[in-house]
Image 1 (spheres, each protein chain N blue to C red):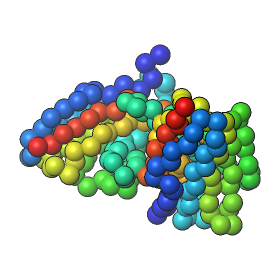
Image 2 (tube, each protein chain N blue to C red):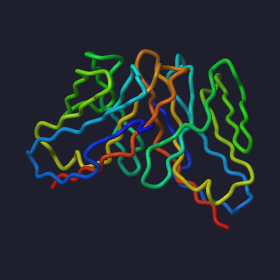
Image 3 (cartoon, chains in turn green, red):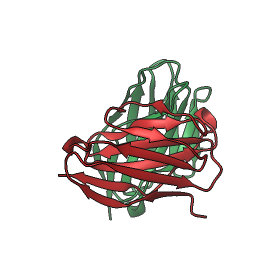
Image 4 (tube, one colour):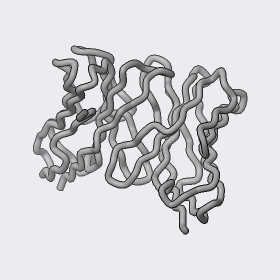
Length: 111
Length: 114
């Protein structure tokens, strides 16, 4: 089955800096890669996603890149703000089943 | 809109006791999921359902049972709770699956097994 590895597990940045979180997946048949943000005490929420026929997608300060050959994808957050502090999960859709998540990255943005 | 509602939000059990977690969604979604979240382990899929009356195993199904008798409800049962099942459980639902299937999560149910 699909296996998703996520790094780093914790990331601390200063407000205004950029943050990058990287994930790799194992199943070459996976074709959908979303990112979820989980704030303290809440359930995860989708923030951005990318499909296997696209190399990059941006939404304001957030961008995701996908390298199908290497089977890895990354989340980029620019101009970080304190409200970006949260746990971020990458995921890969394993065809015929459901989303398989990475172990999460705790991002701390200090002002 | 209520979205996805989980009950109870907190529960303490003794080893060997049984309990059921209830997930209800009001978005008319076909797909429903149960995940567990443990420190350093991320979100792991327990069971899921692709429609009323269907269930399927996820990554970590052992020790759990599920039922989807009504489209809007997905129940997660623990027949004989073990300390290893201490976790935060999240239910989610989606209209479809794959690249068109955004998951909507509940706020979680924290279970402690003593």
